[in-house]
Image (cartoon, rainbow, N blue to C red; front, side, top):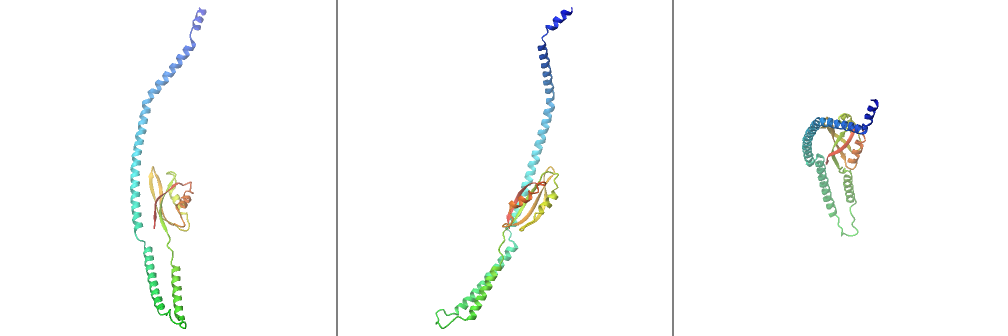
Length: 239
C-alpha cells in the first residue's frame, strides 16, 4: 500500500504544478488591477478638470494684468509728452540770455561804427571804448559758463518678484530702497497680486542716465538672493 502511494506521488509533474500556480497568481493580480482602473480613471478625470479651471483662472489673470499695464503705459506716455516746468524755465532763461546778447551785440556794433577803420595812422581807438567792450565780452562769457548743462534723466518702473508666498515682501521693499547711489531716487511703490497668494513689488525710480543704468539696478536688487527671485523692467521713459 505504501509503495503504491509513493509510486503515485512520484508520477506527479511538480514543475507543471508550480507553473500553473504562478499563472494563477499572475491572473489574480491582473484581475485586481483591472478592478482598480475605474477609481484611477475617476481620479485622473478630476485632476484634468482642476487643470482646466486653473488654465481659465490664469487666462483671466493675464488679461487683467495686460489691461492694467496698457493703462499704465498710456498714462506714462501722457506724462512724458507734458512739458516739464524745468524745461519751460530753461527756455525762458535761454531767450533772456539771447536777448541780452543781441542787445550787447547791437551796442558793440554801435561802438565799432564810431571807429574809423580807414582813418589816419595818427587816430587811435579810445581806450575807454576798448575797456567797455572787453568787460561786456567777459561778462557774457561768464554767464555762458555758469549756465547749467541739461541732465538726461529717465523714469523706470521695476517688477521685483519674490520666491514664494512665504517671502516677506515688506522686507524685500526695504532692501530695495536701501540701494543708494548718486543719480538714483526711489519713488512710489505697491504690492501687486500675482497668483496663489504670491505678491510682487512694483516700484518706481528716477535715474540720471550718465550715472545709473538698468544693469546696475538689476545686479544690486538680485543680490538679495534670499528674497528676490527676479527683476523685470515694466516701463522706461525719458523725462
